[in-house]
Amino acid sequence: MMEPVSPSGRHKFLADVMLGSLARWLRILGYDTCYDNQVDDEDLIARCCADNRIALTRDRRLTQRKALKRSLFITSDNLGEQLREVLAFTGDHVDDRPILTRCLECNSTLQGVTRSAVRALVPSYVYRTQLRFRRCPECNRVYWAGTHRKRMMERIDRLLNSDSEASTT
Ligand SMILES: [Zn+2]
Image (cartoon, rainbow, N blue to C red; front, side, top):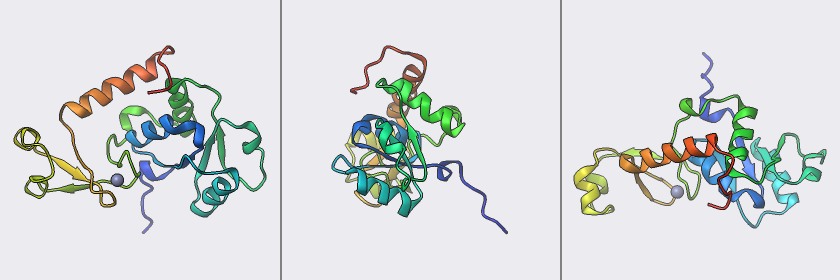
């Protein structure tokens, strides 16, 4: 029997040095997105080929390199427009994305953990008021939903529906 292709696993990205904010928001939307602010063109091409990643880049010349099999030229400097460009490319709708399932710092897939396992790792107020937690298996960061998720969703909504938001945050 064939494994179903998970929505989050269909498109894997590697963002170039210009696209740090976009990379972070793609992780929030559950996309497997590598980002390294030191990577040069040759590294980027090699890593995309080795790991079957789509290069996201603001550099038109890079997309024309034959060694780079899959790339998406990001035309806008505006973060909201950049997100819309990627969603148009993947054909995904934001409401169907597995929001907050990846570590924002290191891109690993978060794992569910019991409440008691994170007791010593989160502020006591958070422990008292939150029921569900996830932890990054790589960097051990702990995530919880609560107001954080709600704020993220509102921010995504604003980003995708406005042209005026700066791309620097
Ligand atoms: Zn992590």
